[in-house]
Length: 152
Image 1 (cartoon, rainbow, N blue to C red):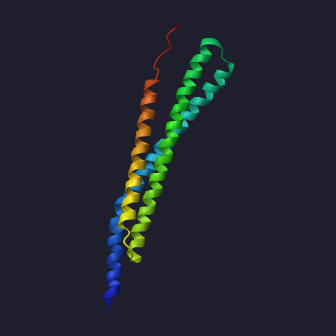
Image 2 (cartoon, rainbow, N blue to C red; image 1 turned 60 degrees about the horizontal axis):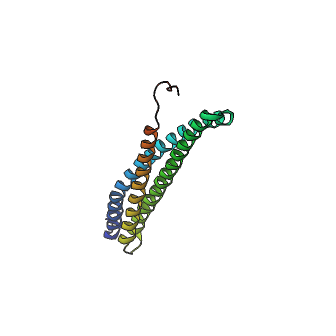
Image 3 (cartoon, rainbow, N blue to C red; image 1 turned 180 degrees about the vertical axis):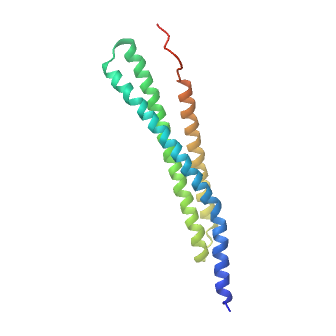
């Protein structure tokens, strides 16, 4: 026969695993978001390199146009960096939440307040990352040019 305290411990651990599943799914989603953000940043960097090379050789109106494009690309890169940093903070905070959920199964302290606070901070970080991503997408579409450049 299994002692009742062992069954209670196993039940507590099983319940903790159930509680940790939702944040782990969130962590998975944030990981996918980080992949999207880093790919987008790589595209921005790839776009900036030839613009910088052309800018060094250009003069007059073309140089001004390239400078404007480089400023836009720079703003986009900063927004992507912000989104990546905030997403990473969210992932770290969610990881700490999961760790604290498991710690609460073994440590007999009430960790509800710190867990809730960290989860709220994680959500605020995620919201900030998504806002930065949205701003970058809007900036990218605003500066989008399709077709040949109009003369003059």
